[in-house]
Length: 350
DNA sequence: GGACATCGCGAACGATGTGG
DNA sequence: CCACATCGTTCGCGATGTCC
Image (cartoon, rainbow, N blue to C red):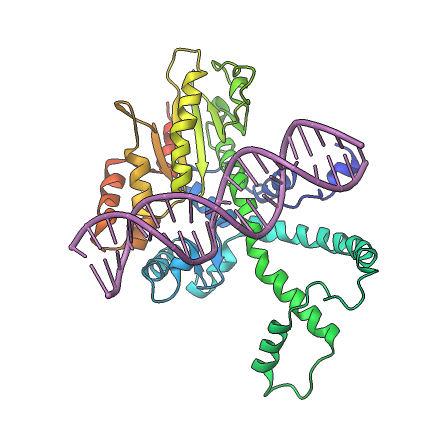
């Protein structure tokens, strides 16, 4: 690696940056025991929802105070605080490592990017005198002034208000960038955890490989696009495991599970079954049950459905006894909805 | 009618390919 | 080498459907 490549990459949430950050995070851990894996996953990826102040386990609009998922979020937050041995008010300090560190990098690149763009923007605006200044939001300014009127003696100059507006916007839009990190970030975290399992030497782990580069799968027909798999595990022995890794699940993506599997099966030429595993952190009981029960012809679609820690959703729902929530304990008890810990053990035992 | 469950699109971004 | 379009992923979000 050259000197240049060793410096912080341009894309703070890109593949290279994530690899550097995860390498740093796992430096103190030569190995990771299966029972600790879920804690690492949450420390790295789980975050506090700013609108509720609680650990995020469901869509934020449905988790607002007074709505059903607020109670469940409280219960989850409570459970997790105890598990991670944190004060409920200080759980944030134990979470969100990857995003916080990534955002520090992003902030640095934003500064230089903004400076560069400001110069260009001046040229772009040159012949439009009197036009609104970018980032200006009169309504927001009035709202702030109204709220603070008892506390400030005079109206700050326009430049100051503009700066405030821009900073406020940047602060609140910061959260949007998290989605970017989560998708491939979850895949990378799993790959790092798998590689550090005691006994992982027998496994070959590939994040986002091309399907046809895995043993026993052929290239797609010319006109068809090559397929990537979220995560693949080769071994133990001749076992091939294809994973679909989704932090959460939406109905429109659920359809994709079957489509993907059909493509994988069509391009399989080994004639030996491959495993198809879903790893998720979804909390909705109905969505989890659907994944557990989803079928292809007369078999279950997924070899295993793995949750970061099923005790989380169980804690969230508590003793609530209605709807799909009733199926959740059943699937956990039967092992159909597996914990990350239990699933990791199946990979390294024997 | 209220409490969910389901649905489907939108914003925001990284990765990749294309074309100049 | 850069600008641009396109694709794929996430959660947010509001509308619609369903059940008691």
